[in-house]
Amino acid sequence: MLDNWKKFKQSVKAAKNKFFEEKITEIGVLNKRPWDLMNWVKHKALPATETTKNNGQPCTSNKLL
Image (cartoon, rainbow, N blue to C red; front, side, top):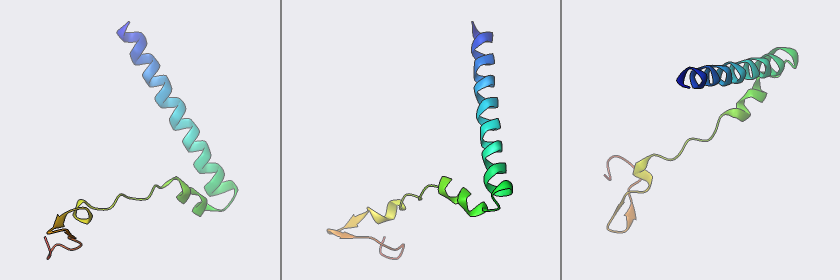
C-alpha cells in the first residue's frame, strides 16, 4: 500500500513538473514573451509590522516599533 502511494506521489510530481516545463517553454521561448510568466508570481503579503499597533496607531516602520 505504501509503495503504491509513493509511486502515485512520484507520478503526480513528474506530471506537474512536465506541465510547468512545457508552459515555460511555450511562453518564454515559442511566444518570445517571457514577461507573461510574471502572472504566476503572487503579490507578497505585507510584513507583520503593518498590522502592529501602538496606542491605536499603526507601526509602519521599525523605528516606531
